[in-house]
Image (cartoon, rainbow, N blue to C red; front, side):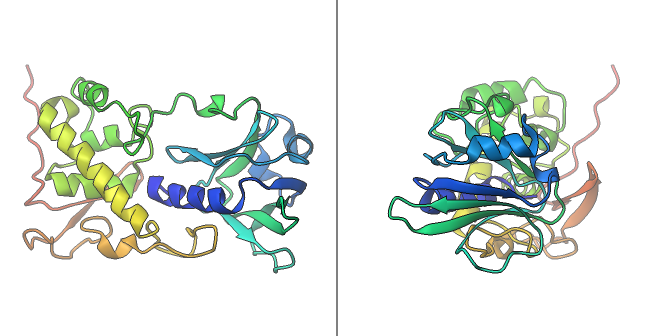
Amino acid sequence: MPELPEVEVVRRGLDAHAVGRTIQAVDVLHTRPVRRDPGGPTGFIASLTGRTITAARRRGKYLWLPLDSGDAILAHLGMSGQMLVQAPGRPDERHLRVRLRLAGPDGGAQELRFVDQRMFGGLATSLGGADLPPEIAHIARDLLDPEFDLDDFVRRVRKRTSAIKRLLLDQSLVSGVGNIYADEALWRARIHGERPGDRLTGKQVRELAGHAADVMRQALDQGGTSFDALYVNVNGESGYFDRSLNAYGREGEACHACGTPIRRVAFMNRSSYFCPTCQPVPRKRRNP
């Protein structure tokens, strides 16, 4: 699933190619991706047609495009969603679900296409959501947000008995961190993902947050992480950060720090990757 760097790459592309353009027409080719729209497919089309996209914004893994009406297009890429900017007349992608026909102030035409093979993602009109869609108001700011409150994050983590990796993935604590970048940050911080939050020092939590921010910035500089053709930017190009990973996806390969084979364990229907030497398994709590 795309994480913060991948979604931010898409946001930047939309900012460059969609902002300032007017939606001339909307084609809903499959109803599932607009299933969360309050007006259904018909309402979705009516609320967007004739509106101008005024910005491209992001909160964690969510994107939204504010409109001149005060509403917004709220987008979540899910596991395989893509938002592509294409020239009119270019052949449709195999899994094209929604098409927005855009006209620029200079009269030039483009299409914004939502492509989603697995259809876990989607688009919806957020009524009055131009500044911040109410549907995502509960999601915390991310580590790259200048208004992220690091002190509050540290306090809240250190009050929890949950494993630190679960806390990193808790979007009400910090948004945008997913499985890949959590594993990478934990490896850099030399912390095992099962270490309880309340057994970390404030310094350790701060350093971990710093590593998570650094790894996401580096991924962003390289266009994100692409393991297959499902994640691409608005031009259809893949990211290259998968070539720089130290832990995630490297089961059995030598740790770049100590040479110990990286280990994989099951985690929330997914996998966690860590170095058993650099990130020792925490001791179990003693019964009182």
